[in-house]
Image (cartoon, rainbow, N blue to C red; front, top):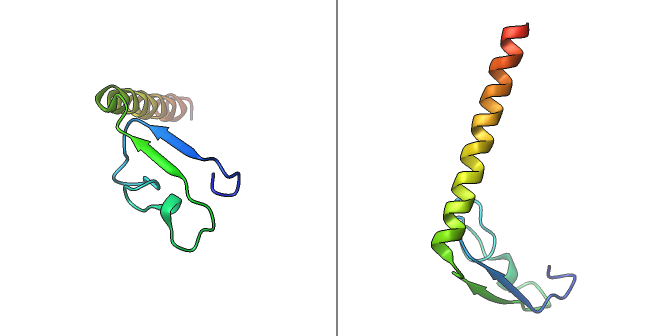
Amino acid sequence: MIHSRIGRVVFGARDAKTGAAGSLMDVLHHPGMNHRVEITEGILADECAALLSDFFRMRRQEIKAQKKAQSSTD
């Protein structure tokens, strides 16, 4: 995003574990970067957090089901 010179990033939910826009780290405001990106966060934060949680919960369930199916065919 920095190299593409995007002027503004808008997002809903932070990720405390792996976020790179002010959560775990802040790549977009790193002092060594030669371009600044405006960040707007928290837009529909609760809804976004719920979407992310649901997506990754379903993904974990899919992976678990795949592993179970694979172990039963072995």
